[in-house]
Length: 274
Image 1 (cartoon, rainbow, N blue to C red):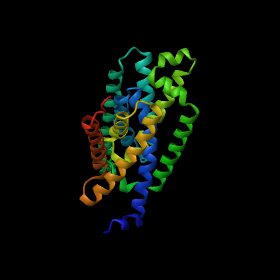
Image 2 (image 1 turned 180 degrees about the horizontal axis):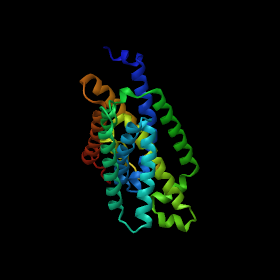
Image 3 (image 1 turned 120 degrees about the vertical axis):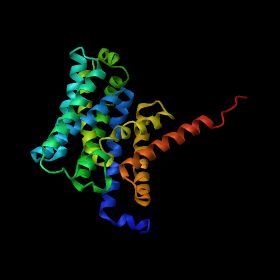
Image 4 (image 1 turned 45 degrees about the horizontal axis):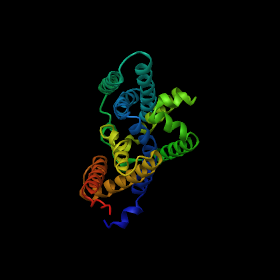
């Protein structure tokens, strides 16, 4: 198949659109995750979603919907337990991470027969993304963009220094819980791209790469959207021609981009001061 012929296929067009909107959503929410140092929370929520998927398969309901409800409740639970109950944040993450995985495994085992789509959620398959998935990601991208435009200063204050934000009379708890909600929703809607196992990288690696060149919150966010999309497109094309799993190769391409940028900054000629 010729290179340009790929664009004639609906599944490939869907994959490109899904990559674009997922990159926007993960770029916006992932910047908050990295700056606020919530990487392991996002990993905990990602793996907790398996509980919702297993419950959805067992009850015969939409697994994405059940995973979203389960993930949002887990995100709120982690936030509440770590801030109100005197439990260390890493311990709270471990509890909900293990709970979600355990619940998912139990209900998948109890389901008669094999859950045929489970591997797509675990490891991702961007070529199977549907128009409804694209619509949900597009709506999420628009909502996140508007939310950031309206509450940009509040989000940045909370991300960098929540104590200082309180002195500015910013509703820190409201922002924190709302961002946790968006983290959970973004994770669940992006699972079909790279899967539960690798999704944490999509929320962190583009931001890490952008942070090599700038410390400005907005610039990191915009650059991570571009880097995320380039990684998705590069991984998509490479996985097709090399006949390897698309989800894994998207993350591989993103990490290669990070390493190339890191090496470039390490070995670029330093400017001499005259």
